[in-house]
Image (cartoon, rainbow, N blue to C red; front, side):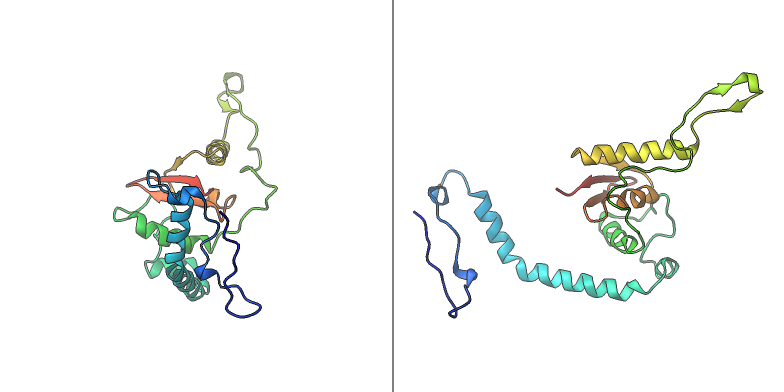
Length: 194
């Protein structure tokens, strides 16, 4: 049975706060909950809270937008390093820091899918004939390979791991709005929001 009535506040506006959508037989199922309905109800109950959080986040961004990275470090709002985390880092502190650090990231254009750089494609081997000259992967080539492996994994829906803050910042350049992180006592789990 379909509920097709419209609940009007005025002649031109529909009041959706009292309209629960289409009613199906599954809505009355007592053996298994209707996950979609429950999710919509939870979203509806948390709407005011979500709006307040977004407003606070916007105000916080405005406050810190005019500060430099060094000023944020002096205020101890972000770590003093781009490398390993401090010993007192928690996931809650990291999430705040990550949001602040994202303000200083310039995302790559969508057509750039991999981390590249000068001479990042060739690899080689030790050459004894040239008296020890090494013709192999540079540190940058190895780093590009590592970041590109993480990008491939998280794009395929997997969770991967980072061990330094600068690695997360490089990945965030490719997935600025969809990258999710979780600090786990010395390393980070990274994945994409779907």
